[in-house]
Structure formats: structure tokens, C-alpha cells
Image (cartoon, rainbow, N blue to C red; front, side):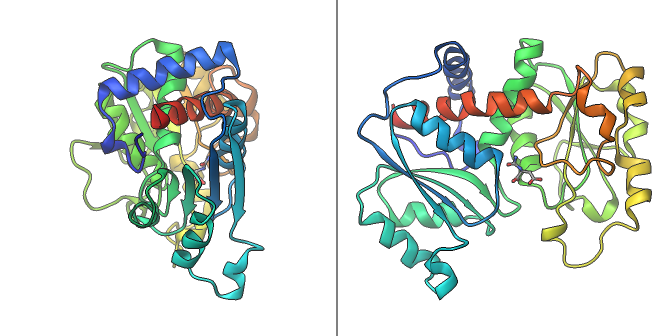
Length: 292
Ligand code: NCD
């Protein structure tokens, strides 16, 4: 049994196995590997895609999911994170899938339980299954990521998706570029090319990953204005049409009109819906990797 707390715990072989499992689940739809197993899905932060796909993944693999949502739980009566963990641990569950607003909360959970833990997003730190599904979406189109140029655009500073993707896509042989307002770039970005605006390098890219501006993680206004942000860091249909082979990803939820224009949604090279679909197969695959 393995936990998945961050991308650095995965080898290239693990990633290849997870992709193989995902492509077989794409055909096979169900399995019984989690039969008799109880998995807590504990979300201390909002989610639609990650939470629903993990819930469905556990069910499609024959397991029982126990959903814990911080809103409406005893957290609102003052119960602490650690007390919540120990309360649910009394049910002898075999696994935890956790999202939390604080970086390293899944690592703290792992210290308190013998069960398997999957990180479904911790603060601005890591979101390993999102990176796996992003890479799998690109891999499904290209067959290999080796030598591909991929630009991650927007709020890199607050993005756990960016941090996990920079690690994972680099491991798979892609060259990573980032572009975003100076206030939204981390100070330390090893082996990454920083591009002033999306327009400066879009013509050299095979793929772009657009990120949501994480207003909930910003203390002060870190962008001058939404209109100015869109001018330098958004993508629109004309740009996509001009760059014929460019694939566009966004982890969602997208702010249409800010990170990408509304009419992009239906373009064949904008893979947002494929990402959601593959997210289910990847999460089934990650559960199989973690439990075998
Ligand atoms: C991402 C997240 O929660 O980090 N969303 C997701 O999991 N699909 C990205 C975001 O919220 O911007």
C-alpha cells in the first residue's frame, strides 16, 4: 500500500503504470479492487470535479466512500483538525482522500493514521492527481510528452496545480515555461523559463495550461485590473485558431472572460471537458496504485 502526498513520491515507472491503469479503466469502467474497503473523502475546501470524481472512483472500484465536508461538520462547532482525524479513524477506514486549505495537512494526517492517504490539494502546495490527469490528457493526444513545450499561465504563486505540474511534466520530458504577472510568480523557479506575457511565446508552445486567479488565497490585490490581466495573460479563440496544433488545458473552475474567453469552450483543442472525464480514470488508477 502506498500513499500519494506529492509528485516527488512517484517514479517514472509509477507514472507509466498509473497511465496504463487509467487507459484500461477507460475501457473497463468498473472493478472490484476496493470491495470491503471504506475510504473517507474529507474536504476542508470547496470542490466539484476532484471530489465528485474521487467519490465515483471509489464506488466504481467497489469501495464505500464516507464523505466528510468541513462546512456543516463539527469543525463549525470548534472541533480541531486533529480531533476530526481521530474521530473518523475510529471507524477503521482503509484510506483517506483529503483536501485542505493548509499546505502539508495531508502529511499531518499521515502521521496520525496507518491508512493510505491521497492528497486532493493542500493549500498552494500540491495537487498530484490534477497534474496526473493533465499529463494523461496530453499523453492521450501526443503519445509522449518528451520534448514538448508547455507554458503554465497565470497565478503560479498560489497554484498547487502549477507546482505539481512543473514537477510531473518535467519528469516526463517536457520543457516548462511560465508566464504571469510578476506579483504572481514565485521567487524561486528552478529550470523554468519565465516569459513576460502569453503572447511572447505562444507560437513556440505545444500546450498551455491556463490557471484560475486564486482570489481566495490573495491578501491584497495582486493584479492591477482584470482587463489588464486578460490583455497579457488570457487566451481567446483567435489565438487558438492562429496556433493550429496548440492544446489548451485549464483545471477548472475557469473564470471565462478572465483567463479564457467564453467562445473557446467549444474549440476542439480546448481540452477542459476531456480533463474532467480523464480525471475519473486517473483517480481510479491512483486508487489502484495506492492499494496494490
Ligand atoms: C484546482 C484546485 O482546486 O487546485 N481545481 C481542481 O482541482 N479542479 C484549481 C483551482 O481551483 O483553480
